[in-house]
Image (cartoon, rainbow, N blue to C red; front, side, top):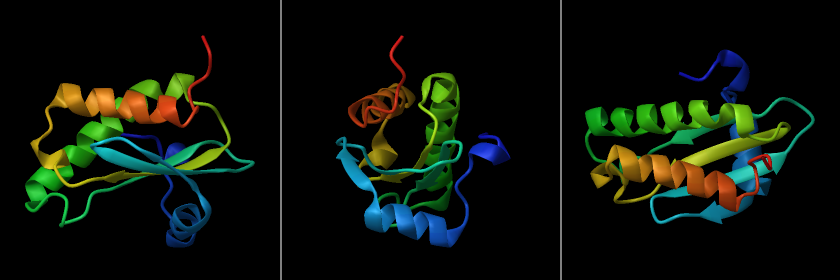
Length: 114
């Protein structure tokens, strides 16, 4: 679970990111990110169209949150991020979801250089 500090939860903030944020694509997930002055906040959206069953939808979001939480120490500060599950994400394995999470943050250049 992401800490409350790192959760993007207000609808107006999510709409701002979706409307003005820069987009990045992976075959399982799509990301929209916008630069802010605050700590990095993240939210996850998996629609009924992408994953039909509620149980599977929640499982996918839970896995995405887990992999993102593990990346938090190396994610750059000052961004609002929305991660959107694409069709087919419900059939993905944990390893594929972990790889998709790493890949999308890397493509968006949101990981600090080590």
